[in-house]
Amino acid sequence: MAAGAGSGAQFVDRVVLHVAAGNGGNGCASIHREKFKPLGGPDGANGGRGGSVVLVVDSNAASLLEYHRRPHRKAANGRPGQGGHRTGADGADVVLPVPDGTVVKEGDTILADLVGEGTRFVIARGGQGGLGNAALATAKRKAPGFALLGEPGEERDVVLELKSVADVALVGFPSAGKSSLIAALSAAKPKIADYPFTTLIPNLGVVSAGDTAFTVADVPGLIEGASEGRGLGLEFLRHIERSSTLAHVLDCATPEPGRDPVSDFEVIERELQAYDRVLGDRPLSDHPRIVVLNKVDVPDARDLAELVRPEFEARGLKVFEVSAASHEGLRELSFAMAAMVEEHRASLPPAEPTRIVIRPEPVGGDVDFEVKDLGDNTYLITGAKPVRWLRQTDFANEEAVGYLADRLARLGVEQALADAGASAGATVLIGTPDDSIVFDWEPEIVAGEVAAGPRGTDRRLDGYR
Image (cartoon, rainbow, N blue to C red):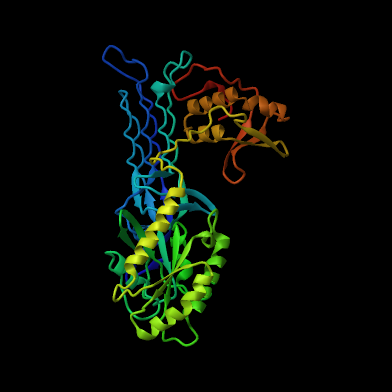
């Protein structure tokens, strides 16, 4: 959501981000040549790795506004390899700073919950560079006339959601005095006025009480039906999920008929409970609460606060009568908040430093590929390795195609097709039903043997061109 004053958005807490990592550079097929050494062996180098797109928690990032304005981000491609064993340069990564508390989603799946300065998450990984012919040389194939292509980088469409990291969340109706209260408690300077929905962005303030420092979030005003999409509250309820304490700020001087602190409290509680259905392990209904009866500097408001105070205390709630205008009761309120925050912090497990968890792809898993009989002598081959090898193959080069056939044979694809009942001339698809490359299977072509011939050709393919 974007919100702000004037025509330009000033705060964004939810965006759809389209990211594309860089492609890997192609490998180089080159032969070293000198005056008296025309065939000095292969010297084609590997291509460079494509750049990745990385999210990094940065304390200087206040919102997701930058990605609302520019939602498409792409990293640089890797450079191709060159002769003389000159490896292609890696593509530059694109590093995107995000606020503390950013959640990364893809569909309904949460990919990452980024909390803590410097936390990094690779959202799209760059493609690997292709091998040059120097790296492909073997005892049988001493001077390959081909190189592998670079792999494409990942592309993703993800949703970034900002959930403010605050210890205490101030909740209440519009114009209940939350902005004035946070301004009086801290050095924050929110926009303050006496009309509904003054606060269009969550304000954060740092409060010190004795030796305890904690953050307070001024969440935009809720109204009845906010959990069903009315008003602004639903868009900002995510900002109080991480808080340890909820403070109900109740207006004791409201001029609106039919409203009083008790009914306001009950309306907000119903909306918080309704929002619990979308939360996970710690719903809002489990957060400790306190009640703040605000604007007691007004005589009639003080009388009303004294009248309703016993009813809240009967519910087991701590009650504080305060005035953001005269600062009455703010010291007691700040120390009570600090005590609740300290109690919550003491219940947490010991903090660990931010770590980057590396989860490498499994090597040599139980199933490298699968062969599926589609009927009518047609077969579909799926699996990470065959699909990856296809992307690396230059199909304009016969020797590269022959090398692919050899790799598939070593993986066991040829034998698996025979076991599945494929006959000569079978149609073989590698990839997915919607995105695949089609081959005609000819089992009489012997795989694994290198037939001598001009560079870039494969004599085993004679007659099948």
